Every structure is written in C-alpha cells, then in structure tokens.
Length: 282
Image: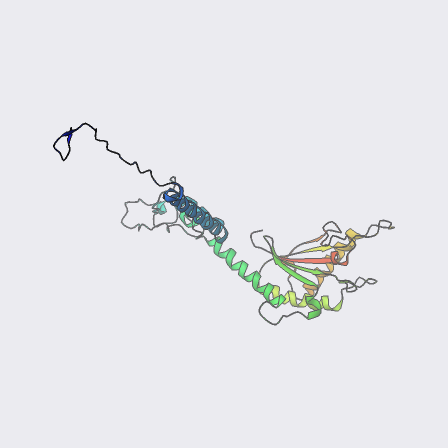
C-alpha cells in the first residue's frame, strides 16, 4: 500500500509502464551493408578471374589450377638428376635437392610445365617474335616498308596457328597476272624478291595456296582448278628464282573458287595467292 502525504493509505495500485524499443526498421539496420559488401567482393573476384583468363597462357592457367588443387603437392622437391633422382638414392650425399628444377627442358617437371617453364614455350615465343618481325618489315610496321606502295595495296598479313599468312590479292582493273599470257605483273615479281629476302631471315618452311574467282555458269571448259594451281606454281617459281631454297617449300595447293574472300563469288578480290610461313611444330 502506498502512503500519501496526509499519512493515509492510498488504495490505488502502482502501475509501471515499460516502453519496448524495437530494433532498426529497414534502412536503420546494418544488415544490408554486409550483403552489399559481399556483393562487391564477389564482383571484384569475378573481374579478377576474367582478367586472369585473358592475361595468362594455358600453361600458366594450369599452374594456377594446380596450386589450388589438393591433389598437387604444395612443395615440389625433385632430385638433382635428369629423371627419377638421376638413378641415385635420395639419401645420396652427391645428389643436391632442387625445388622443382631437377628436370631438364627436354623432360620438364610437372611444376615447370604448369608455370610455363619449358623449352618448347621459349621456342614458341622466339618463333612468334621472328614471324612478327617479318610481318613488320613487310608491312612497314617499324617505319619504312621494303615493299612499294603499289604492292602494299594488294597485301594483307595475319598471324595464325598455322603461321604467318601473307595474302596477295587482285583489285578491280589491277590483276596479279596478265589476262592473255598468264604472266605475273611486274610489281608481283618485285614483291616475290622482297619476300624471298625476308624469308631468308628465318628457317620456317613455306606453303602456297592459289585461289580464283568464280566463272560464269555457261563456260565451255572448267578452268578454275587448273588456274589456281598454275598461279600457285608460278609464285613458287618466283620465290625460288629469288633465292628461296626448294627444300623449304612444303606444299603447293590450288583451291579454285571454293573459299572466296568476298561475298560476291565473281569479285576480283577472290583472285589471290597465300604464302604461309609455317610454324615449326606443324
């Protein structure tokens, strides 16, 4: 009972109100910040993955995959010899343990392969640089071209898995071969001299492909196959006359009009010769 100031008992009960304060409503809370941070982290990891896929070689990607794979030992230790401990015991005092570098370039360890540290990869990089240098010299990539402006209008180059492809094509009213005699035009002869000189700076073998445009449907005689092969053979003879050893020519092929470069099968652009500096591994 509560006693009032007059000394009398107060029969009224005592009521205590407790105000319940609820947690943060919606944006007042911090849970969304955690979710947003997770999203940003995931996006950063995604873009990092995309960059790695674009900026690394197949062997380097394999090395990254092997690093995070539990089936690959973290520490690769090999004997000092070339092979399984070089035929000696791992406890031999004369065998010096090396960290993943015991094998040679001819028989690289799995670690060296996954990191791209093989002799073949170095050879491929050197070959790629040599082919690119030939392309630059031919197309004026480093400044002055060795080819006349007339010839450059007819030349396109590209590096492919097969090698350096040099495509020489006809233009409207500017063919590669004389229409009546079939002889090569003068600038094509000069171009073959330049190419033979550039090919002498590398050891890659050469392949030649001949192509022609389509003929009208009504013809008395099919000549596209014979023409494409004959033109490829003329290009081979020009290169050999300019000094290219015959042993370096692997093949001479005629494709007629089967692989047009222009959508119009009758276009002069489809009259062309491809000279390919083949990669050594092919």
